[in-house]
Length: 413
Image 1 (cartoon, rainbow, N blue to C red):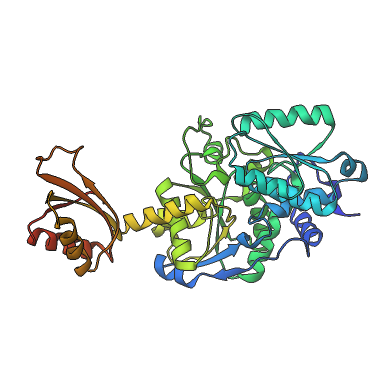
Image 2: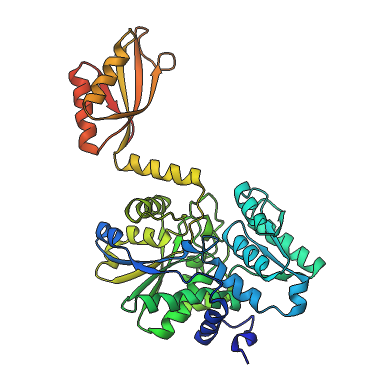
């Protein structure tokens, strides 16, 4: 008998269950590579391998657990259909594989879910219902629908079959990179790290598992540290791991197998997304880049180790990605805003543009301020956004402006 058929809702899966799950999903979920990240390793001064779950059909690891759960439905359950609550990756994983298997799927999403995510999920054949102003209210709607219509809930993380499916990532990492001694895994509800930890610890007991959470949503961190669950206000770039309360099965596994949880700031998550894009040419969402953010947050802790982290998702909104990359240029001093005081007379703007151009700066935007700044009527403030090489180049441009008689200050840092 298939041992995973007997998985209990109250007991985490075993490594045998994870091996069984690997057989179940083989051929239907991409066996993603875990590759040495040479450019990233050189930039961070560490030995880092990346498990590229962004290569999955729906762009995230969630397909593994969703498919394993769906594959263990009996005929009656398949006929009734399934329901899931998600604002993104889990929704798409369930919808995609339910469509493949001919299982009716209902996905409940918060009313403020971006239209692109709603459209993408519906494109996989799911019935999408928008309920509530957040995930908590969407969860309440799911409970009501399950009671009314008898649909089978596919939980995003607190389910033994789902955890077993995610655990197949741990098997693959150690098959590809058997020498690693530290695994860094993002945590939302905990399904990913729980499955990976069970698999990795069974195969290599001395491996260290480190979790990562956003400082904005430290739910598993607080549970493990025996702190009260926070109110969790605010926004985070890592919305894929922005979970108010972790799972009950998953917290048991984390307590047993996870050495520590690192909290990362929004700036560190942004820098990680930017670094993956610039160094490795990889598009990662905030949650997907959280493991790299941990390396940025605590570099001394990870020096000298053989590391692997899971790039668990790549479904970042293109507008947000563009903003993150532009903000990275500003932080690096490669995009700056200068303010120069100029005379409000013909030809002045052309002379300033020529000075900047001859100094090698590329003008991106220019604002001629006459009315809203406290300057004499015959003068004007000129705000110029310039693309530069680095901080030294910025200082050179300012010096040339000063030498030409234009009082110039740096507004951005």
